[in-house]
Length: 138
Image (cartoon, rainbow, N blue to C red; front, side, top):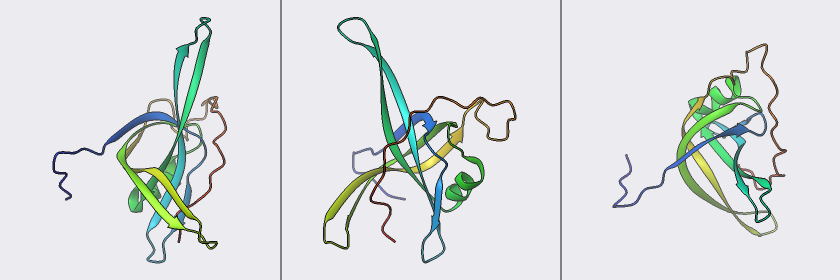
């Protein structure tokens, strides 16, 4: 267990998955899943028009959670997520340095009405996820 010395790194999100999880395996055989999550908020501009702003978050799940994601999570699912922000830094083959902040998922729960096996589920309106680069370097 890690001790924090007076600081907290905790993220709680509720949103819709922007794509099906992508699952890979490390050389040691550990499963790792990545998926994008959209959260949206509504606001009114100066003219009174309602605007929606969508924020995209990259979720990373390891081992059993990654296997769960592979089996159960699908694009459009409404999920509750708890995790920590993790900054990844790496250098590509051209010696370019890259930095990315992901949510390292501790807990993910499908919320009511988003079970992928429901036959009458309606495909939710999820904006397309932005193009992603800089996958986990392995």
